[in-house]
Length: 438
Length: 157
Image (cartoon, rainbow over all chains, first blue to last red; front, top):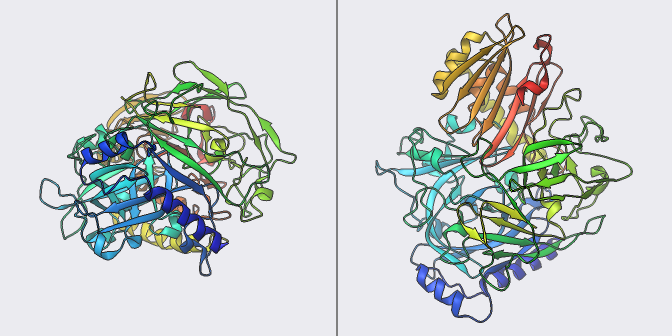
């Protein structure tokens, strides 16, 4: 299996670097390359596989399920030689910003990528929350290339960076959950958040002490304590981490993620394509896809949520998320997997169930978001990376009461579909983002 | 294939949380404590506060600077029995959940397939449900044995 993973990694690398995007040392060179080359380069190969080789070693070895990965090239700002291609960077339409574990970056490259400085002249640190925990690290600048697209001097988060960044601030861990501080904890060498917002925080972080999923810190040598304001710039000079797609000079209004259909029992791996831009090239037009608009940053529910109607109940905080590896929803009538067992919290229907919730955009467009829910215990019995139809219940534990207001369509929903994610405030295929379309 | 590594890392995190909890104890509130501690939470979060009181329970609704909301539910005898949150970031749960925060940490050590899942707690006397994605989080922590008569779970949505 290891051999297969390495071979796939090499394939991705070829695909990612063959587009001719260059180092991206200036935005204009990237733009002219993309538009003058007959072969379209606004794309990168995506693989759903067992994950970085490093997680499948040692006594705690495991392999990934339902995680989509790409390769991303980073260079020291202005350099075309001090570069590294990072494989197994997770594709996440549910978050924003590029984050890479410092431990997988060559030391000569890491030291050549300067940390962002704040108004006090100190390095900037960042805490970023996920649904199961948080990451902490430095904010550094790199020239980034993915497929044929690039951004110069783009802030990214170097996860679990050393020195002053090795201590997680108490106000970061106070949000609860695990410190996802290693590649093994995270299940990827990094993550590229390409969700519906232009930066990873927006207005909440533009005031001192502000925070959202992102919390920015002033990091003098004594440690990272004070939460600082960072501007939500969509283009250089950046402060908050930008959505890398929003920061491209072209093809910057969203993405199209295309993954092949998965057989019912799953399969070892799958390869697909992530296209940049919507309606900007011949390979990313909306075509017959229907647009389902979502909330923006000003919503009390946050950006990127729409309605799902399940069993007659409208769940107003629902979303599509390539970074979720399951369908997460609450239905106390579906047989759960055995309590306190390895699969506690998953659904174990037998036989499989055909479910058909309605997905409804804020624009009123709706569609049956149908899928088959299989027995998770059976589905996870192999080392298949592609595991369709698995669901989890975030709250089976209090079965008499249903607090549910959310339905999370994770990566299994993306199998066999072309899913568009349009960025807030950007016109994409004739409709203003934010929206999902499929 | 199991999540043993995550368990070990999680335990380390748990010890850290417990030690920090001890340091921060004097300012702690609120779940399971008196409603008077809600004010400390409000001050800690630099939030505004609006209170609604019925014969069944009181709700203190706090609006955070980031646009998020935290609600604390208190019984007529003054005990905070539930805390709910929604917003672009998870709030300071160490502050809001008090002594229960360490339970959240230890009960969310990963197990089974290495699938990242929302924070949950499943205990007879303490339940947490949560969800969301980066930039939009929500959840509720509740003491089932302490809910007052007439309280409906739908009230915390």
